[in-house]
Image (tube, rainbow over all chains, first blue to last red; front, side, top):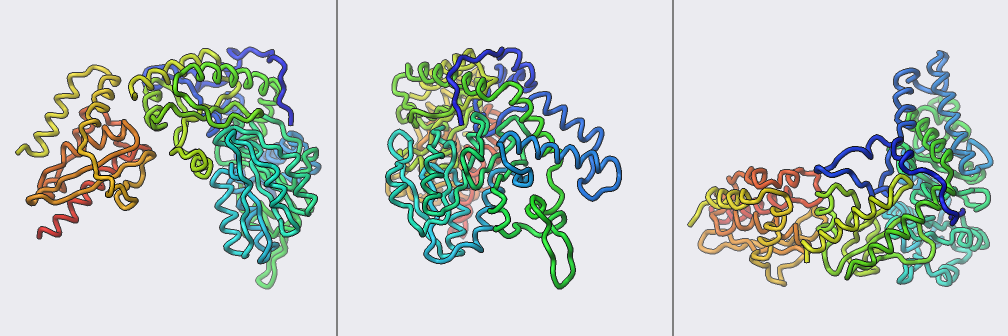
Length: 412
Length: 141
């Protein structure tokens, strides 16, 4: 994990040309896309990969004897290796393709159902996305385990001393997002993993919000499970990855039954396939997996240090400009955060601001960002969330700030 | 007493005076200020309309066989939208509300809000007002 501070040396105008969607107009205005934390945009290189797949070698993978099937299998497995290298996993079969982060989390939660017993404890953070709370609540209901929550402070950072107090030999699992989706806070995951391991608990990090900005090294982190979605990293929707340490993946039972995941089947007994296929029942999103690989190539070609440095520049610029608006309050002000600004103005409803600036061509997210506990903490119905990507510009931030001011004038 | 159709035409005429979306929204916000407010005691979860990103409460009461709506929202634009609906439908016989057409929304330039997937829940609001009308109509029969 490294958030670089060096000045970026890349030409954003050249990069923007790779993203056809950025040249479209919305409601008569040039699109300003600041909803990257929900879904990032797709560069032509990734679009070309998708078109190429369906134009030249669309076929079902594995076990096919024909050329197309072999080509598709090779490309899919090559993507798996790209992802393995990107996250520095030790083995390629520790990379399981899923339909996204939510699917990956549910896969782990479902697997733990057979490993937990009454009295065991699961710890989650107060900063979690709903998809990171609900599966554990369901798991607790099923197993009799208890859910504990690491509280957060006013700045949006987790209270680490309280986390340590929650840890005990009863703790079996700790689930934390690497970066908070609602606030952008970067959590001290290395410390969390170290402390959890001291009591023998496994750690799953939700990397969905971190992966577009920070290149995580799963071996260096020593994390047990790490999950990401492709659609937040310039890839297509409907595909993601679960990284799991081999020993953990071997311990978990299969998640779904079906083709691909079996070795032999008789009516008496089925033996399961080896990793990673044990967890990849049915025909996967083949094209999506290949395109995810292409998206990683694209981002690595620019470089994550360069991306992080440029996005931090955007974050600082936008924070400074927004602060000039009277009555504007930013939520999530902890020192280390990714390029996300969650804010409200006075008691204006975030929905009102989002609606007005949409009319001016600006895409932001409004609402509770699937993190109601975080909103409850601040006692607000939601926020306006602007999230930046490396293809955004300071000029766009200027347009955005003007639009927010205009909305404020209309609404107050 | 004006009919729902007459009131809707009146609203459409008002909105026609504005040439751009900005003025239309400003007018809608203005209309929100004249919304007959729901009493605090009726701001309960039961009276909350589902499917809106902001909160909208609606209460309905029969007065001389006419259904009277009061409402409120925590978002200004949503309040404007519900105010338009309440203005068109309130103080009308339940039967007329059930049978009322809502295409006037289209004509006042709020067409984009009519999509059922839109987070503001205009469709849910219309459905809720009509549900009240159905419930009270049954009572009248």
